[in-house]
Image (cartoon, rainbow over all chains, first blue to last red; front, top):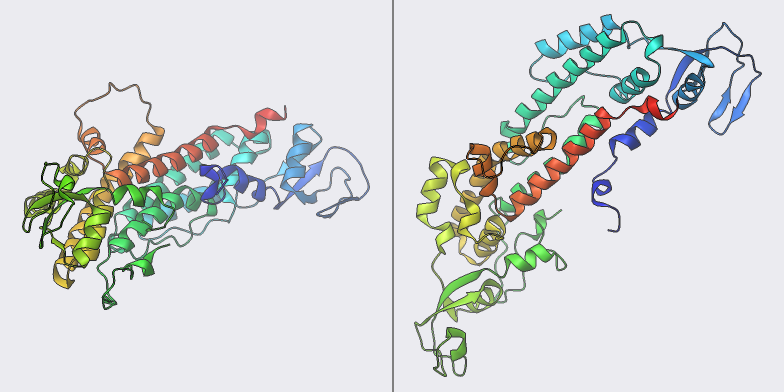
Length: 203
Length: 191
């Protein structure tokens, strides 16, 4: 394939961030404007001080121009994330359910609109803790029995971003394991050698 | 691990030399032995690349014992501590221990075949955790450590064979990519 190597395995974190910016978020505009028709839909009207719903990319763009305040999504508060972290720690077997674009959204919000959040540094460290707990679980999962037998890895509730980090390594490792698996369906070897056993497991 | 026609790795892995003995006289191929003789005699041993040895062996012109990289000695060592076996030494520095083993297994009969494949699979799964740690760790670690240090990680890294090395590179690359993303600041470009 002509794609650069790091793009062949699926979406990159940057691409996932781009997708995350399609999600909508509430903003409080600091300017007045009537409804605006964009390709993705009709947004507005923008009347301060009432809130309106726009895609994240628009919110970020307006925020950068200091034309709005972003209202963080309801899951993006210290209480909620602390609760998540607690749940994540107590539940060693599986991952807890995060909003699909949790990591990407929280990161861009922290980067761009940290002054609209309460205690951004606290949020940041909580997010980091959460990530570390989940990473540790992934690491343990990689050494679990399912992987050892080359069959499966428990990834329920992992977000696409976390998967994208894991996927290339895992896919290749599983591929190798499956190709080393003892042949189950014994193809009766024909008198010729042109029957190549093991084809059935190639990805 | 594909046997794709276009896979360069598969071709290179097929090039490992296998020591075979002929079961019959062959005229005019004495140069394969490297000697001055014109013919190959029955029972004489010749080092053949695997792609040739495979065909000859399937047609029972040659036979071969299991080559040293897959011998019982190695098997025992793998059983004792899979992570400290230096696979790269067994098959030459750019060898493919798993691939070649699998290719050899293709030629073997049922029982030794299952046995060999089991050895390969066990070795791989036992080495995987170390490999995973190392590749994840290497992505974020700075590389200012002196080269050739003797920590177990470094030892393991030196002992990786072709596919493990590839896997290591893949893991490292994706780790690097996400680390770069976490460290980047989306806000900076707009302000």
